[in-house]
Amino acid sequence: MWGKSTAAVFLGMPLSVLVVGFAALLSHDQASTTLPWLLLFFLVWIGVMTCTFLFKTGLRAWLWMGCLTIAGYAALHFLKASGLLRIAA
Image 1 (tube, rainbow, N blue to C red):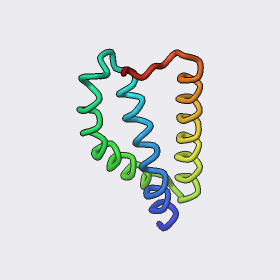
Image 2: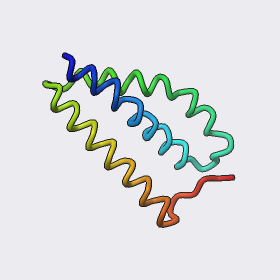
Image 3: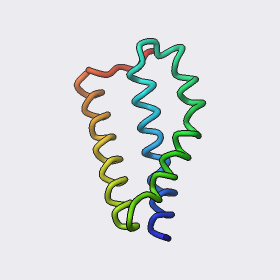
Image 4: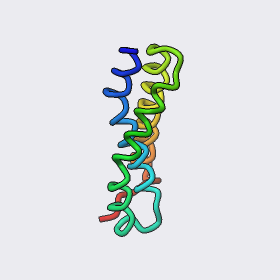
């Protein structure tokens, strides 16, 4: 139980930021859709933390959520570095 709880606390927020950030950055009109996505962040965060408790063990929760977080941020970095994803000014 402690393993799942710590995975939810420490990996839930970065994974939620990644999900909401991708959704906001991939929208067609970033200026008008970013704020609604940011307002949904708390619900996404609660959903990610809740899904952590669906894993069988704490180790699996740490591994899956950690790998998803690392892969997501690596993909975000690749997309921004290659110029395929731009932030609207």
